[in-house]
Length: 300
Image (spheres, rainbow, N blue to C red):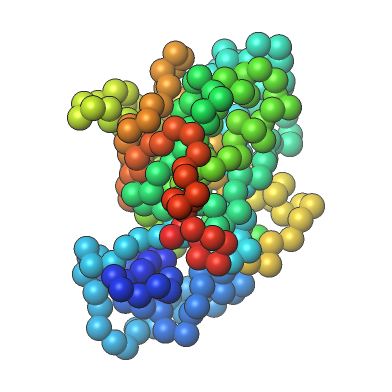
């Protein structure tokens, strides 16, 4: 069973539902995912276990949206895998030791990634900056955390990044990580109790270009250098998240330089039992008529 945020053809509103066996059933009385993340884990599990009246729609008849809304924020973790540390050291021109030190430090690297309304959903364009030469997807397991700091679910995050900009100076991290199209989530949220061992999930990345595979790789969460509850604990130490928070846990797959995403590529990320997230790539900003929607309906 998965938790989905979706639209039905001809209807403007985003709905929240359960997906199981190829069918989607609306969760009646739940206007947003954020409402669910205000519940303790036990109450959430009980709420999702109740049968919902009404017809179920085939998954093919709904449009999946980014599984984040309201004032739920997306945060991310850095340098949590050895391969990520090595990639950051390689790309850095002036401060390679920063990444070496944070890998073994008690405090992890955590940074803000996106507001809910800016997150891209399944099938939507992800972006690479026009002022960057080397840009990569970063496939990651993402945690869905409720307001009480409990991990209630898992989804997939593409933490799209500019290696050019971050490599120039670590202080440029926000520009390398936070921009239009830099974050995608989906295709849905798998409840925590449906994932027996989050440290035993395969992660696969495939980048397609002109109908052929341009780069692909596999790894897994067994290589994670940090504990998931440790990452959540540091995030919740100095902040409150009334509508919960999504925390991406770092990447274990980094295409080597000089590989870079191009306009028209497709990025496909599969994480274990969670699912597959696929997005086309767009270079630069969209025009005024195609800016991806406005804050009230995240992921449209």
